[in-house]
Length: 409
Ligand code: AMP
Image (cartoon, rainbow, N blue to C red; front, side):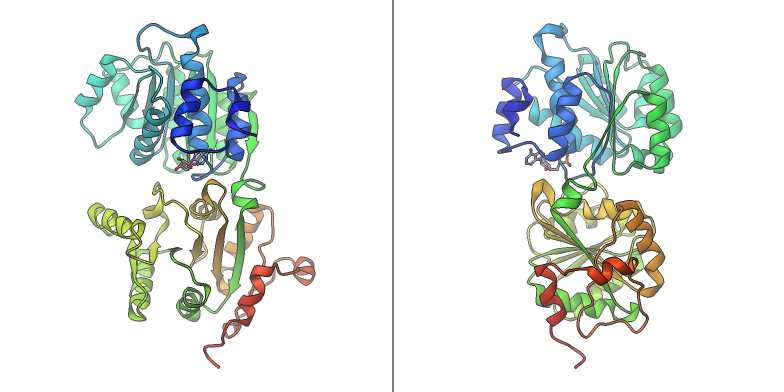
């Protein structure tokens, strides 16, 4: 499929040409026609799959369609996001894709002056990207009017639920016209997400690319069983033997991130850590250095890594297995972007087996275990699915791993 098949208007297609997008990503190919067809949609897709354009493009198409165009700038599409960073990022996307259209968009979020946001709203916008709290503040101050809203988007809805925004969201939804199109995006179809989605729409079409799309097809997942005490040593071995130009490494704790960064630095591998105890400025600098290839390894905690857009990360390493299975999907959403090949490598010690099982349940697949020669654990990590393991035929890429040199002799 290419963009012409989607029948988006010429000004939109021109903006995509400017971005040098060749063809729709899998989520775009499924979601765009559904939205253009006026369906309510609930879609599971994480950052990196092209999900933002999947809802922004058809929204822009609909708003600018001469058949139902409005005079002036009336607020007709509302996009709610969990964080300021995401609101700003989504708004940038709207601006990029509406470059050749007359539609106007703005983002409103906490931590920035409300007055400036009120001025922009007064001038009129067609699309508003907002975080829940600030949106309610603006509503209470009568700075925003919902009466013409036709389309509601909840972006990263599961994260909004995790962050405790459920009441704000319900309040906002209660203020919107009942006749509207509901578009709900989430990383995973959790029970709490499904409950919310059902409340918003009984007839939403379910679309998922988490298992056979970006995170399944083009990302190789595998697990290296290893004793906890030897994880850093194994990571160093992998960095040295696998020829990675860069890697993003996740640890569970801030302390763990700092410790690992020091261990890598000690053996001459340039690494930086980002986590909640670092200042915003510090984090931005570390991120810049990584993006500019000045550091080889970025060690991050889950919270610090949220919302960062790093392009073409070939491998993501879970130094610690995430305690919340969903975080695995968030983490590996950093690799295999835009259809590129990616690797999701998880170092698992025996005490983390339960957590690994939770992830495998969520992904509905058993991840292949690949022991690295010289690092076979003394404390064995169970295989998860004995039959599968027995029949498991290692893919070509795995074989050399077991041949890698044995550091301990
Ligand atoms: P998102 O999942 O919305 O965070 O998008 C991830 C990245 O993919 C962004 O940097 C987009 O610019 C890019 N992207 C979106 N759609 C396409 C496409 N059809 N082809 C190539 N890149 C895309």
